[in-house]
Image 1 (cartoon, helix red, strand yellow):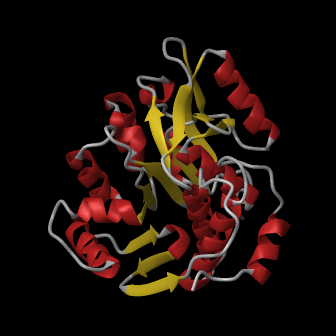
Image 2 (cartoon, rainbow, N blue to C red; image 1 turned 90 degrees about the vertical axis):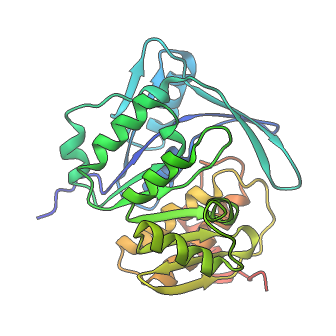
Length: 302
């Protein structure tokens, strides 16, 4: 019998405050993924680190109230809780100033992580949390215990290096990134004309069988074990795009865990990502029925 207390997905990395022109909201890519997985009934947990400050306590209070597991939020007595300052570059694109060093740069190994991660179906991690030596070494130690490693690329200059990104890619079973990140990374090797060519080259170089690429208003594309699946963009009125890609990943993984095929998972993920773009911040309050309503009535960006 399956252990109902088992966390089906473990996320690793940053939890922080997004200080945006529209207001201050909690976030961080792994936290956003974790939040939406909880909404989708997958009982996830997040390994992260916060400061001994009001901002850290408020994050715990907020997410605990939302039913999110905060048991693996480490407490840092030296470094403050993470903050990101965001500004609007154009109509829908944000530019971020990510403060460092902060608490999530110093996530420490705990012996409890080995059984926690080995019992989970998926281990989700990003490239941003690998910017610091301490959290990166903890991440690599945890990965040795993971069944299926899901890398959510999140390239924020100057918080990444080619060598570390390549090392993460080599360790991943599933990789998700956006179209701009796909173009940037494949530009390290050689020019390619199409997303499909770029994806195939990356998958060949790093032995990645499953890759997901989001294309913003154009939807998304997946290469799943050598077969391509595409989904056009979903037409919605955008409030902001913060956390939209994170909710997409949560939706895709949740669908795959429910036994959906990649095309069904891709469609649901695009709908969830589009819905979150109609809301403020990466972790808005919503009911799954609202997403299902959009699922039944959406129009594609032809």
